[in-house]
Length: 261
Image 1: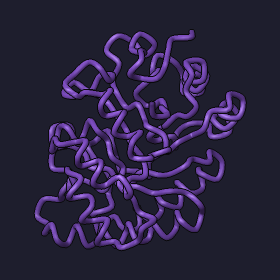
Image 2: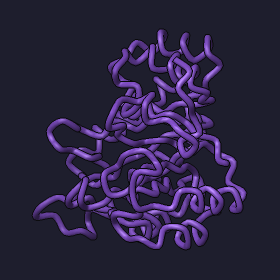
Image 3: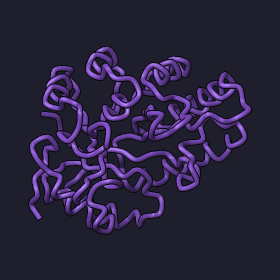
């Protein structure tokens, strides 16, 4: 069975963020994810992580105005300075929170801008970010987002993401493989995972199509977990799902957690 990390942006949202770390620890998680911790009290988060012994598996680079629809800015040459300032901001916060890695959302396709131009600037920005994160000792990945949840996302499939990673040409940059997004966007999830396993730096899961906990939809998670185990992957598997009836009520054998509250 893989090692699971609780995504605190989607789980335990009934509680303040610091308490979510405590709740995750009580449920048996050894790690957590926080997508965008920039508005939180970093010292309070660090204290909660230290107190519980829970690791911070990852957080995202700043991704523009998420509430307004941004899903990253790496492909926008007009925001190149903003992107690179965001990398610096993430690294400053990482000095306190000490995540295992970062995720970079590339961005939605820009109307009126040739796709080739967008991919070129994304590759430039990712090359910069890969060099900066490697020097600081943190991993880096990019994640495809499916076109149902993120219409017009520039890299909606694993093939598109890998083409961009290959264009960057730095092996420090890896694929973040989310089985939910992959199922929605392309299917064939376990064979694709097996093909790309040695270039995958982080995994996330939720069931499809409703993005609830594993075991509520169409994905055969016992088989998925066996494929992950057989691949030799030893990193964290982030639970990034929307619990329909409250977080603790969603736990069971397929989430690797139990309600200990």
